[in-house]
Amino acid sequence: MPEALRARLDLQAVLDAAVEAVILIDENGVIETFNRSAERLFGWTAAEVLGKNVSLLMEGAHHASHDGYLKRFLTTGEAKIIGIGREVPARRRDGTVFPAMLAVGEVQQSNPRRFVGFLHDITLRRQAEESARQSEARLNHFARLSTMGEMAAGLAHEINQPLTAIATFSQAASRMLARPEGIEREDLNEALDQITAQALRAGEVIKRLRAFVKNREVRHERVDCRRLVEDSRLLLEADARSNNVRLRLEAAESLPEVTADPVQLQQVIINLVRNAIDATVATPGPRSEVVLSASLDDEGMVEVAVVDHGHGLSAEAAERLFHPFFTTKPSGTGLGLVISSSIIRAHNGRLAYRTTPGGGCTFFFTLPPLGVLPGADSH
Ligand SMILES: Nc1ncnc2c1ncn2[C@@H]1O[C@H](COP(=O)(O)OP(=O)(O)OP(=O)(O)O)[C@@H](O)[C@H]1O
Ligand SMILES: [Mg+2]
Image (cartoon, rainbow, N blue to C red; front, side, top):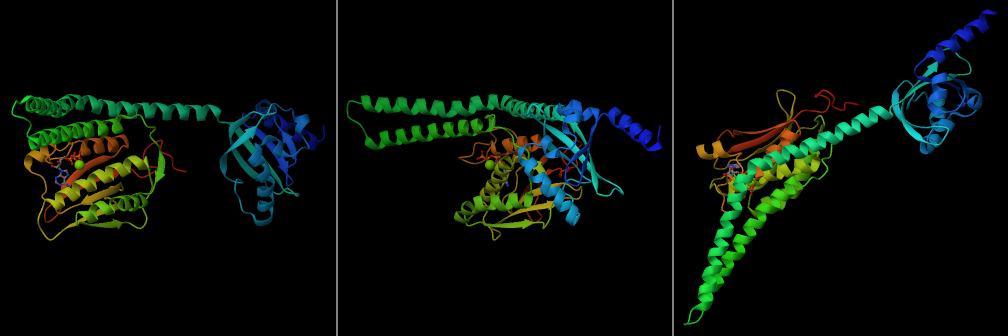
């Protein structure tokens, strides 16, 4: 058997034994080799596709752009896919589309130029990732529910108080109406105002809890914390201004991104800044300023901090800070920090506080930068 033919047959045998689909194309995208795995994967036989354009194996949009890629690579050497593995939608003979991992290399020293593509089906991997994502979302939901369990006892108490007050004031109002000497309008008004205020308070507690437990889909996005604090500042500006508090931003120029649900993180920042504004307003003094910062801490974690020069924490407050319904404010629900720390925990982060030098509190949370956690998305 001639040497060249033998080499060719050997090569074909190797290709056919390969687990990956191997497809060789010329510089116009015309298929020259199509191994067994490729036949199995795509449902075409080699005989059917040899001499056809490789776009036959691609899904619509990719199909159109592929010729463009190849031309651009040939004229400029600019690689979109060549030399790099990437996920592409591929199309079987029966028209079904599946996700595939494709790596393309140029065949060295061939003239005219040729390219070889290695491809495998990643449907199963995608399915596994999707089910992992779903169970993580369910876990997050449970984490929130168990915080709810913690809250239930406090909640009963918290709702019971306004309900008792409402009952008391409405009984008083009935008695007033039954009085033979007639009604004191002012007294009746007072009772009704109290009933309204207590009902609103109970409603507020329920509203916050409901918003928290609602099984909204938790998003996992790449978040730039610098942008996050800038956006949050816009939302908080009016609140700060109406309280005569200056809200200053200190954000590092470039920060690694984090994987997070930006809406939830914003909710945490808003809770912390509102607390800082409350503490600042309640404290007479010259430093009516709250600083919202985003930086990298000593351990390489992304830190978002809210610095105030308010009254700081009493020993009791320091101890009960994270207990549901602990509040020192007449209209507080005492849920802000509980909800915030639960959100940060669900993001594998930490929420804590330290004393601001010179007095006041600095509440901060840290989050692992993208790629630090095992399994985190890093490409
Ligand atoms: N920056 C701060 N400085 C001083 N005390 C604080 C600060 N942040 C929180 N606290 C104390 O912790 C308590 C609990 O805060 P949390 O945010 O959980 O509830 P709240 O602000 O009282 O009510 P809500 O946030 O539900 O409206 C506050 O009432 C306050 O006493
Ligand atoms: Mg609060």
